[in-house]
Length: 141
Image (cartoon, rainbow, N blue to C red; front, side):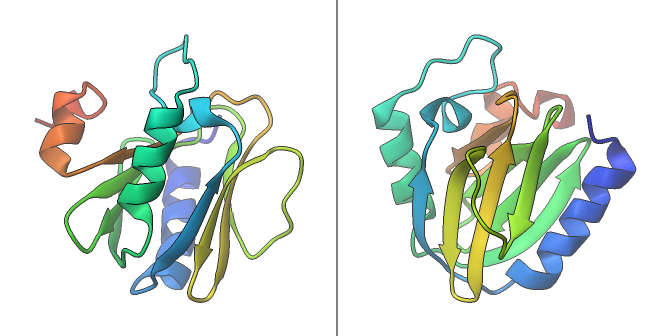
């Protein structure tokens, strides 16, 4: 599992290549990754559609870390919350593998979310208040 310094390094790397870029398209291969953060996640086509609709055509404004969560803030104050758990990876402009579960197409390339074990999650929220209310960031309320 990545420790805090490793998560911060990932955040800083993403910040260098993502700020000001637009998500042009999103492909979700494993729906449970965008469904919830619980241990017993079940994929949901509705959640996948909400995730894709919420992210597509939005510009990345800020990237921060709270504990081991990477938070990507979008232009309309919505956000993407990423937790890598044990084997999650966020990679820029690399080739997809059988463990690539989300592909974000951007102005300047592709951002891939890979996870061999599938424990991590990438969630969309309309705003930080919604994320805090969902339990995921409750301790920062």
